[in-house]
Image 1 (cartoon, rainbow, N blue to C red):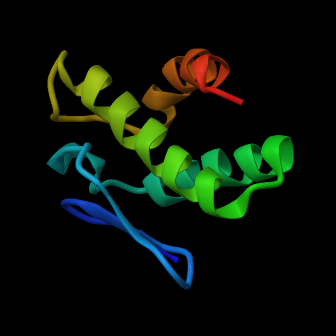
Image 2: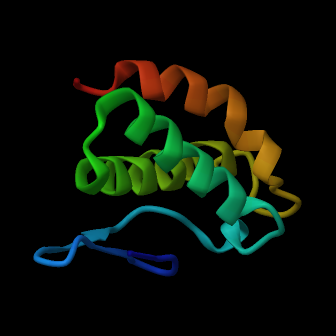
Image 3: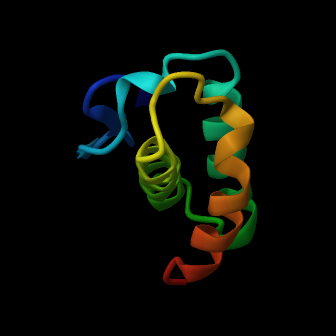
Length: 93
């Protein structure tokens, strides 16, 4: 389970993890879709649902933090995609 918010909570039925990344600009349409895509892509690549949820939530939030350094106003979900492509390839296997 992933509960998006300030300090995204990920729960796998046994362990709670908190992702302390992200910013208010992420409260825009499509952000949850991008998050879901990150997690689904990681599950497809690793077959590890729990790790994929935590890493996906972190990658998504971290990418938004990097992009928001140029300004939080007007941040769109699609603005994260170029950075996510780079960051997902740097993720440990």
